[in-house]
Image (cartoon, rainbow, N blue to C red; front, side, top):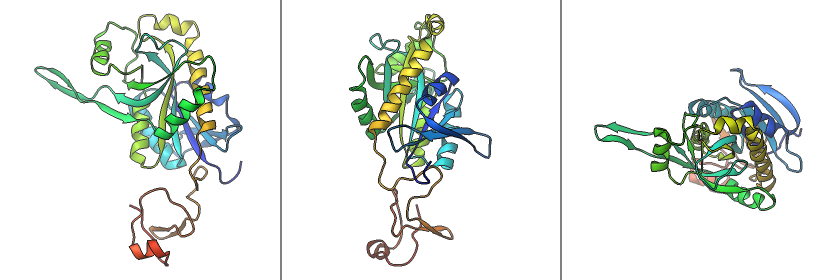
Length: 290
């Protein structure tokens, strides 16, 4: 693989989700973080993207911690969390794909004598990636895609009449799907500063008592493959930023001097502080990052 190649981090929770995305990535090689976290890095055909795949396991907190670690290590241009989810809407069926316009963390709130007061936590998906997704799915005949909020909760919802199901319908009634990791990954990307992020979920069940039967019929495999296909199509539409770099690479033109980085002759997508005359005239001297 070339030394300099734009980079994307694609995250999954389950082995079948990982396998579905992996099928789209060629020339893979494994890398291991010093803490033992493993990724496979390869090439998405017909694009300039270098893609790192990671299987993180279940849960929003775990996803947030590991996504932060992987962003710090690999410095990708964008992060996508891809996998399966349960439907929260009658018109969002098994095999459909939900692209998260925003993601809700559903457990935030305050318990009072009057009841539980919801304090919604919502993060938007990347506008650029969402636009790429809207364009990509137009060219995917037979695919039903929905652009809607997604709810994240540390619960496997298999009872549409349960208290948690009623809670979600009452307080997050525009959500089209429920899953367990998206809010953690989006929060990590948001706090990193300059990383686009999007959650893409294939629908494997209706988050009701029929979940076990749906899973046994192969619906999870179908949903994972649909989400992976949309992800690959999105990346074929999405364009790298100018000056973007490969995994673990610094922005082009960057040089180091102690605790400073000199970006003369290079491009840095982020806030820079320093003397205004140096920044305007390109005089000698390094500029520290905020």
